Amino acid sequence: MSETKNSERPQAAPAEPALDISRRKLLGTVGAVGAAGLALGAAGGAGAYAAVQPPDDTTPLTSVGATEVMFHGKHQAGITTPLQSTGHLIAFDLAPGAGRKEAAALMRRWSATAESLMAGKPAGGGDTGVALDAGPSSLSITFGFGHSFFDRTRLTDRRPGQLDPLPDFSSDQLDPRRSGGDLWVQIGADDALVAFHALRAIQRDAGAAAGVRWQMNGFNRTPGATGKPMTARNLMGQIDGTGNPKPSDADFEQRIFVPDGGQPDWMAGGSYAVVRRIRMLLDSWEKLAQPEQEKVIGRKKSNGAPLSGGDENTEMRLDQFGPDGKLVIPQNAHARIAAPEQNGGAAMLRRAFSFHDGIAADGSPDAGLLFVCWQADPIRGFVPVQRKLDRGDALSPFLRHEASGLFAVPGGPRAGEYVGQRLLES
Image (cartoon, rainbow, N blue to C red; front, side, top):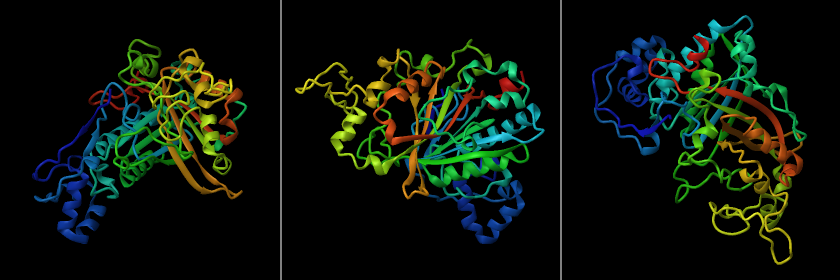
């Protein structure tokens, strides 16, 4: 499993190759040599990085900036990594004529860039310098393959059945231009500039091999904004993520990750990501009084506790009736319908970002949830739950599913390996 650590800033040392000099060290160097040195760095590429010395007295990073997520591991980063404050989701299509060879070269470039940036180092000789003064800031970069990728690379015999297109849902109003894609990248960080820096590096690395199909930008609370760690709230003000499977659960691995020896073999340690852009009809939602909102969800808005009592982590009492003879948690409440015990134990790890893309043509906020969920098999995870929600969820009138994607996310790379190598070089 990918791990997270607090990286300590090393002491000043003699100049090193470009990928061994942190963004923070490089900023100190720019300050020492002035604007002329910065211009030289932009023109001189990797050689310019090696020609300068880090300062001896830079201030240590805060814990938020210093936290580093490991690139190598059994699983890719960005799945069990704690949710970051800034996110970018981006899909690419391979260029006309590009195939397996070009895809392998691209994944090598992307993996090298991700490994460097996640360690708080520049993105090679063409680094833009956007995040020079920042540490890793919990940056994670995750890569996945869409259904169409296997046609483009002539690897259809290695395409997993779990990537078969998702069924149609009656509530879908999907825009095909913002759905699907050959390749998918998820970027998360606790600093917006670090996340943007990674986004631009990934886009540049695509070069002539692939073009952007769609991009979505999201956010969450900043670490430290609350008095204690809390489950994230969405733009409806509801706590979102209660009941998520936990790594401490005995069956967590089998629910979320493809096991060793599973099929296909190149997906061992991997997971399947369902991505949905869900617009929230906030003008309508905010007209509901809080008690009505809570009945729609089935939980208290204040602390996420089920309407049947307790706190956020108290098990819902789905058979509890109130003095009026009605179910305390209504039959069509979102929390009731989505509960694993109501869906044959179906579970997924929800890891979403909120989004706000301004005001729509009708004057309403174009805002909502960039829903990302992870599971070992979407046919047993996402699909049965969404089918039930589609048939009678009280929340559905306040949502609009506008984009969708399903991606196979292979296991984490071993040392010296790039993401997807076991597929592309088999």
